[in-house]
Image (cartoon, rainbow, N blue to C red):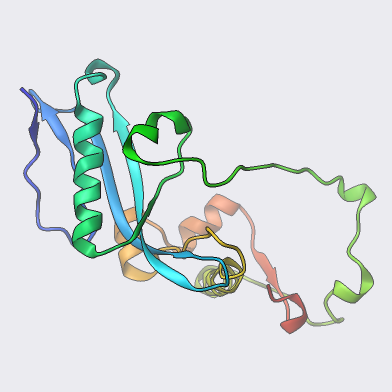
Length: 191
């Protein structure tokens, strides 16, 4: 028998956060959280970010995924979000729930030995400095907020205490994951 794990009082509104269990073992998980999506023209709309979708291999083809996605969609409807998105490693799985391919991804590698910035795009002498910690995080966040509004389909990022509680995100974790300080410069380098 599969049942839902009783919810504890959440510190942050994460959404459905459904976790079906069988014999005290979690057999699947999915969640949704409120963010924004950029539309053509730069306007934004509330969006449900579907995340953490997984079903144990021992419980596939038993309706667990259908129940999990249904719980996420109910939560999305409760919050009044007109859009729900997810990034999937296997897109075909989610077509039956109304999802489709919204974009493709391409990775490009540039040989730095054969490339350079055009002179008019480089920072002025003395305009670059290294920052780290919360200052680096603040700059990265501000640049992302400006840049994401220039491209339809980009999404906002959770920030502040809510993001830290959910993801363990902090400036020190961010810097450890990037293993270096970042450099910032004046307005000529803005996104």
